[in-house]
Length: 56
Image (tube, rainbow, N blue to C red; front, side, top):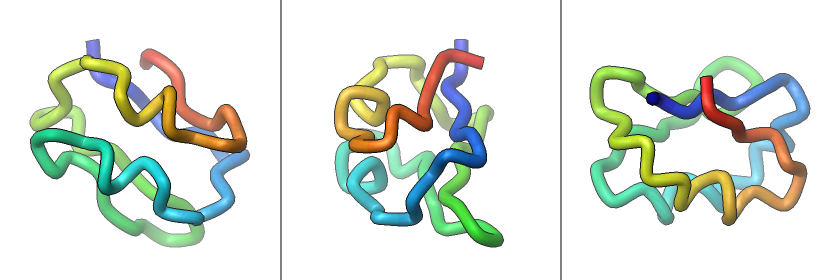
């Protein structure tokens, strides 16, 4: 299942570099995860200091 980023995102970018497939990019006001690319590995969730990433 793909992960999602909530509005609690701080736009710090910590998650972007952790994604092994490049599914995370800067969106309007927060980072976004492309569900078509997301492997569901959870590496981004562990990297998020705000706890803004969870399984969607």
